[in-house]
Length: 144
Image (cartoon, rainbow, N blue to C red; front, side):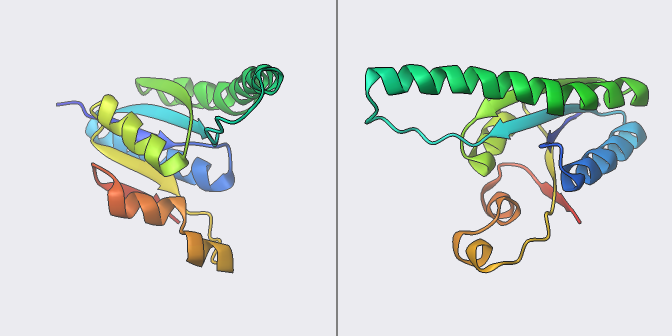
């Protein structure tokens, strides 16, 4: 039975390692991949109408840039691997959004790459990997 594996992907070396690992798992087990790119976006609601319009324009530009620079190259990589795949781009808190993507798509696992940042801010505020490991609705594979 084919499962859907969700890969958090941002174009970084860490996300490429996670994608490569997920590809090998999908090839070995006959699974498909859902590659999710999440753009962080805070839901400010106290903006003026002109600020909201400007923000909407910037959001469209970000999506187009992400599609061109991040998702198109990965789509070529997936076609070369011969694995069934889908892509999605969403706005929101990265860990929460990846959980929602996995839940909505009936994903079996989430794969992400570990950035290796162990700085003060990460220890206080947490990392995407740490958050996912605690709250994800499915198993999380953190690729070093």
